[in-house]
Amino acid sequence: MTNPIIIWFRRDLRISDHVALSKAIETGRPIIPVFICDPIMEALGAAPKWRFGLGVEHFAKTLAALGSRLILRRGEPLAELRDLIRETGADTVYWSRAYDTDAIARDRVVKAGLQNDGIDAQSHQGHVLFEPWSVANKSGGYFKVYTPFWKTVRGRQVDACLPAPKSLSPPSEWPESDTLTDWQLGRDMRRGADVVSRYICVGETNAQARLDAFLDDAIGDYQRERDFPNKPSTSRLSENLTYGEISPRMIWHSAYVAMQKGAQGGEHFLKELVWREYAYHLMYHFPALADQNWRSEWDTFHWLPDNENAERWRRGMTGEPMVDAAMRELYITGTMHNRMRMIAASYLTKHLRTDWRVGRDWFADCLIDWDPAANAMGWQWVAGCGPDASPYFRIFNPATQGEKFDKQQLYRKRFLLDDTRAEYRAFFAAIPKSWHITPSTPYPEPAISLADGRKAALDAYAAMRGGVGEI
Image (tube, rainbow, N blue to C red; front, side, top):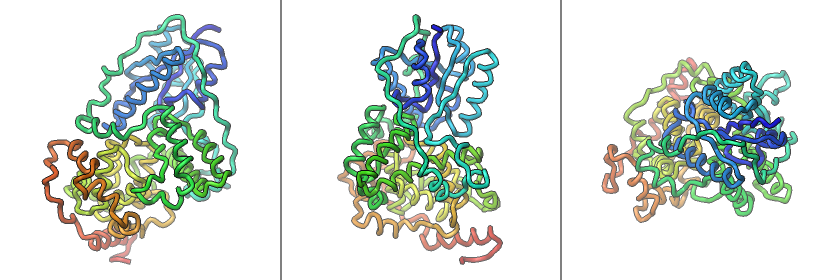
């Protein structure tokens, strides 16, 4: 057979350890790589859409070095793929599976439509270690608590990584392609793009180098130091994982080898990688995870809608230094340290009692490592309405968290308190002018006392449970 195979790329912008691509290469047939800017991508927030575009641009160069091309199309995937099939004579379409709710719905429509046309449409394992339906508890259901999930999968064999091809067989003629600049994927970033671009790490080669640096320098101290935001003790691979510039299998195997060689933080790092896996396990089995409370009893909780204090939170002007430093880190770098995400999210949902979906939306707009499952589960976990064994009492106190994890205020000085630092100044260069915040704007008094906010949250939780007052 000489008809070309279309490989539909999405959140899998790499050539190594790529199941669908490897399967296509095995056939010996010409390959047409395609990326479609579809409604799901159009709906992304400003930062992830901009960062996705940079990943696509870099990936196109990677394919060009293999003697191939990345064909760009914009529109509904089924219609665009049908057009490409007519133009090229392709009779086969492969892609990597996605596991978030919107992508699953999209892919079902595409697969059914193509198969109805007589096209060989195949989806292959995507950006997870284990297919969500392949992990079940003893009763055959899905896991609703993380620890049993971890204990079940930690001993499973993870398939070996697939090698990167050295070339790709091109078709006799290439179809027309859109131009990436015409898509204007960075349009909504405005002033922020110049600032955030200093902190990004784009592409497969850079992702692998980032992994190597973590294994060489930080994995040994990972468990002990990962909660200290001013220490370079995390892998920062979430940015690359979300666009598929590195596979979770590559990370798993590399970290596993390091653990076997004695890296003290190796197992804990693997547990965090599986935490991401658990998020997709939950979203697959509870498709409404991104929008509805996982614990239905929380539907009666009196969340506040978007409000003035939530706006202060978004702008890094709550008057709580740990919270504001975290929110400024987000706006400057496009990411936020994991401990700081928990502190910032707890403050919004508990001290300010603001609906977790308000925070979910802001992170979805600002994070370059935004992940549909991990973001949703993280917000619900912190808010108390998600899968958690004891959410009722977990209220992070920003002041005591600062004393514990930023005792010398190095993190707060970097982003909030020291006007000689580049990161401090970068915030004012990145934020919208409409915020009217400048270096001379006085830092505000706290929006709410921490003690009062905690008491109000506990009173609200007790009322929801049918009690009264703080417990």
